[in-house]
Length: 111
Length: 116
Image (cartoon, rainbow over all chains, first blue to last red; front, side, top):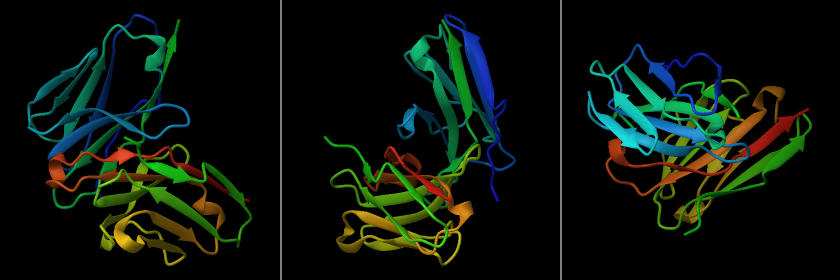
C-alpha cells in the first residue's frame, strides 16, 4: 500500500534554532498536509499544499509540495518551547477521501 | 463552534470484552472518519461515512469492528471481542464534504484503548 516516510522518529533542538522535516513517498500524492499533535489532543492541521511546487507559509512555518509530488518538507524557524509535539505529514491521492499519514516526528525544544 | 468530541478519553478493558467508542462530529459536517494509531506507528485510516452511509471501509481490520452512524450525526465504533492488538489511540475526524482534495479533516482528541 501507499506509505509516507518520515525520519528520524525524534528530533531535539535548542530554542531559537530552525528545524526542517522531510516526508517522502514512492507514490504520487495530489495534496500534502502537515499536522501537529499536542499531548492529549488530536492532530491539528498546520499547512495544506495543493499544487506541485507550491511553497506556503503560516507564521514561522513554511512547507513545500515537491515537484515530483512524492515529497514535501516543513520548516520551523526560530523554534519556541510550544513547538514541542508530534509532527505528521499526510497525503491525499484524490482517488478517495482517506488520508495516508507518516509515522510522525516527535520534536523536543530545549529552553 | 464546538470541535470534534470523542468519548471516552481512555478505556482499559480485558481481552474478550466489548468496548464502544463514540464520536460527535462538528455540527453540519457530512463526512466522518475513523482512524487508529498503534504506538509508534502511523495513523491509519479505518473507515469513512458520508452522512449515514459507509463510503469506504477498506481500512477496517476485521469483522470484530463495527461502525455505525445512525441518522448521520454521531458515530460509534464497537470492538467485540477485543484483542491485545486492538490497543491504540482511535481518532475520529469530520469534514464538510467539499472536493476530496481540499476538504479539511478536523480531528478529535482520540480515545486511548488499552486491551489487557
